[in-house]
Image 1 (cartoon, rainbow, N blue to C red):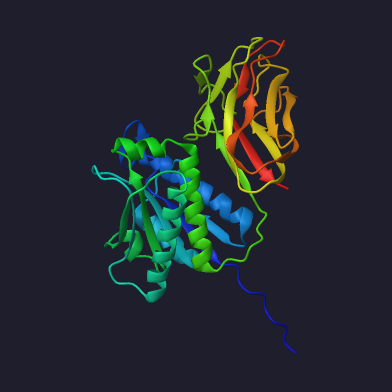
Image 2: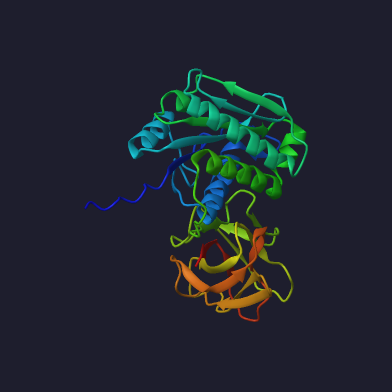
Length: 329
């Protein structure tokens, strides 16, 4: 007797709009490409932590992607659903979403589900105008072979909307709304548990440091475009990496830094765990240019400053803050 085959894991394609040389809309000190990437990455992380789903993204870093790349990549991968994340411009206010001008009832149902869930999540944080569900002849909606929706998450050039987009809690809510709408439309099974996220010192809204921290591109062992450095001092002046943890549990934390014999031998890293702060000292003179685990920690769910690189050390040499990676284990 033939054995039943396991059901295929649903495949979602997430498309953070713009990227690389294409900044998208700009306004009020914000760039669309940074916001769309942040919301899309948080959407991915929420889904992977809570549901059984296979996710592919048009980009996970600040790189250029053509419209034809996005649609053809989703088509060739065989995605079951496509969601493109954008930020609006033009002086309006509020949230709106789009499907293609001629679509199936499945796409229309997906549109309704995503729109209502995203708007509800946004309104859990602040007052947001509903601009409605619309249709448009956008490339990524027209040329994709699966149900496809494009979201326009507030207006970057309107001060009220921009102030919301600057808030990490609002972007996290927008991502949660995307994730819940996607999960409900696709009928995703709960479970997941697979969660990993990387925060670089250049990740929009996810890294903060005072003016005492310099920026350098000198070392070839850096994680991304650059890294931060500062002289040690017996004072509180930490650089913080902010992470949205979708679900409480044990997580491995890794750090990436360039290394040099003149760097600090005991750079303090402070992790905000479920039971309080824990400190780990890292010798940054060696072991650079790769991920280094600093331990596994019990973390509470929520979006907050999670890992600090502190200047408070008696050891000499620059302390370095470059990137961290958090993985649920």
